Amino acid sequence: MPEGAKASGRIEMLDTLGVTLPIVQAPMAGVSTPALAAAVSNAGGLGSIGIGATDPSGARKMIEELRAATDRAFNVNVFVHETPQPDPAREAAWLDALRPYFDAFGAMPPSSLRTIYKSFADDPEMLKLLIDMKPAVVSLHFGLPSADAIAALKQAGIMLFATATSLDEARKIEAAGIDVIVAQGIEAGGHRGVFDPHAHDDGLGTIALTRLLVRHCSLPVVAAGGIMDGAGIAAVRDLGAVAAQLGTAFIACPETSADDGYRKALMGDGAYHTQLTSLISGRPARAIANRFTALGDVLDGAVPSYPIAYDAGKALNAAAKAQGEYGFGAQWAGQGAPLARAMPAAELVTTLMRELDAVDRG
Image (cartoon, rainbow, N blue to C red; front, side):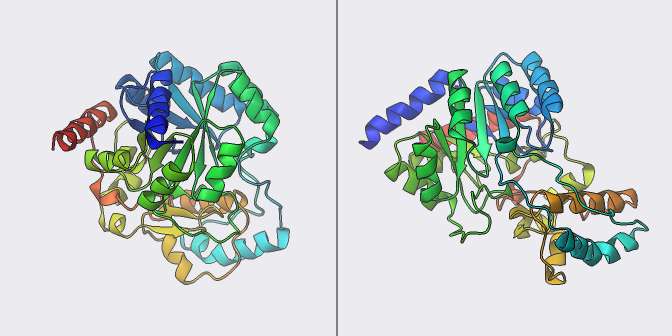
């Protein structure tokens, strides 16, 4: 398909949603809030919430709160990770390896680890909730659900986004009947959206990945990873993306649920040294360099599967925070973290568009 025809399809995608600005606020489960998503949507972008870390009851509450705050389109994100296989021996060994760090805060590690998040692929109740609630967009991270689930969501009139970190994943997304591809570069904060965390990851950057997908796929592409300002949005639009997805750029907004330690870290030296780590959750994720990420230099045990490992990570963070130490938090952030700005979300959207307009005017 000629790129001109594909560009027309991309514009049509934004028009269908009633989104007037080429900005998607990343879902960021655990950090984004209905208030943040509403502010972004009301400002003309596409606000998002992540429900991968909650159950259908919690998801319903979040969607209802968001819907009460905006009449604009918004995105609801789910995790479609592989079903974790418990390994009691491996999990016990991991807890033993973390024990000295719990001891340092006068706390005991959990006696065992749980699967704290259910995959959307294994959650028919969450599927039913989304079909009943009918958000304008549902986005998929870590993989794809069954063909039946995709068909049911589309039948409900929901537009589907899915994350790709490679051309191979993008082609699977396209073949599955998804509407939009989110091209997640290696620069992005938070969890890598790789379908198979055990397979080789080429670690493609946002620029290369976006251009590959625009050239070789017929679907609209939203670029994600390291984009923090209007110049970044302009750059990925020049590559053929319909919009840019920004996550780290919004963390410092007062509407997020980031704690004081996270906000301070985002503005500190660690933000210049983000790194991918599986220690915290069991899946590769980019975080601000802190005391938890530094454990990679001393821990050589096998990390349990995602999200089982996250049960230990959250417990260690809670023990540390109880003693005033915030360096064991999941302080997810992308490589553009030093460019973060603390301002209300609506003001940030306005600032981004002013910067983008300045680039467009030359």
